[in-house]
Image (cartoon, rainbow, N blue to C red; front, side, top):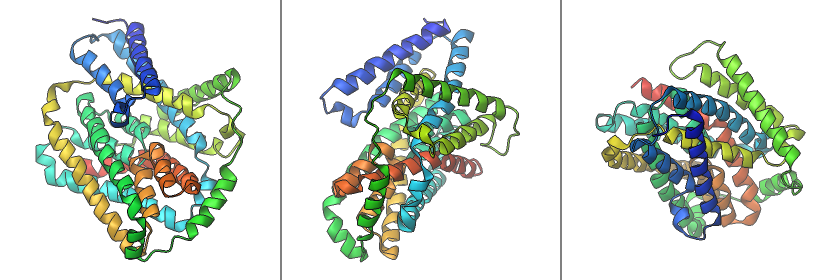
Length: 388
C-alpha cells in the first residue's frame, strides 16, 4: 500500500508513460477502439479499487497540488492555437452550425436527464455536465469541469465510459455518412461552393512553417509560462467571489488561464512549437490522478449511462438533420460542426479530410473553437441540470 505522495505520483507517471508509449508504437487496431487515455483511467482506477493507494494526507496533498497546477497550465497551452481572427473567417454558416450543434448537445443532456433521472446514481448531474464539456469541446474541458464541480470519481468513471462507447459510435456514424454527401445535399438543396473559398482563405493563413521541431529552449519557455499563469490564476481566483453553483475560485482560475491563452494565441508566442505536445502530457497525467481516486463499486449502473449517451446523441442528431433541412446545410458543414463538438481535434479534421483534403483546416479551426468554449457549455449544462 502506497502512502507517500511522491511515490504515489511517480507510480502514476510510470503507468501513464508505459501506456502512452505502447499506444504510439503499437500497430494494433485495439487502440483505435480503446484510446490510451481510457486505459490510463482504468489502470489508475483498478489500483485504487484494489487498495494499492492508501488514503493518506501525503497522497491527498500531492493529488491536490499536482492537479491544481497542471489543469490551468494545460488549458492555456491548448488555447495557444486558438486564433480568434482565423475562426471568424469561417463565416456565419459554419459558425452557426457549430453553435447549433453545441446547444443541441446541451439540450440532449437536459432532456435525457429529465426522462431518466430516477435511474441515476447521486450527483450524476455533475458527471453529465463534465461530459457535456467534453462533447462540446474535448477531454481537457471534461477534466476541468470535473475539478470545478468536484465530480465524485466513481460517477466520473461513467462519464468516461460514455465518452468512449457513445463517442466511438457517433464518429463511425459520421464517417459512414460521407459517401452519401451528394444524396444528402440534394435532399437539403444546399450549395456548398462557398466551402472552396473559405478553405482557400484559411489554408493561406494557417500554412506557417513550424517545422523547426521542439527544442530545449521552447519546452522550458512554454513550461515556465504555463506554470506561472496557473499559479497566478489560482491566486486571483482565491480572491474573487463565488457566483451560483458552478462559478467558484477554480472557475475564475480557468477563465483567467483561458483569457491568457486566447490573447497569446494572437502573438508570436503561438508560433513556438511544442504547446500541444506538452499540454497532452499534462492531460494524461491529470486523467491518471483523477482515476486514482475512482471506485468501481457502482459499475453495475453503467448500462443506463450508455443508453443515456445514445439518447443524447439521438436528440442531437435529429435536431441537426432538421436544421440542415430548414437552412439548406450541406453534409460537410453538418458533420464537421457535430464532430468539432463531440470529437474535437482528434476527429473533426479527419472527417473534413474525408470530404476533401483542402477542407482539413476548417475541421481544425472548428475543433479549436470547441476547445475554447467547451468548458463554458459544461458550466451552462451544470446550472441547468442542478436546477432540475
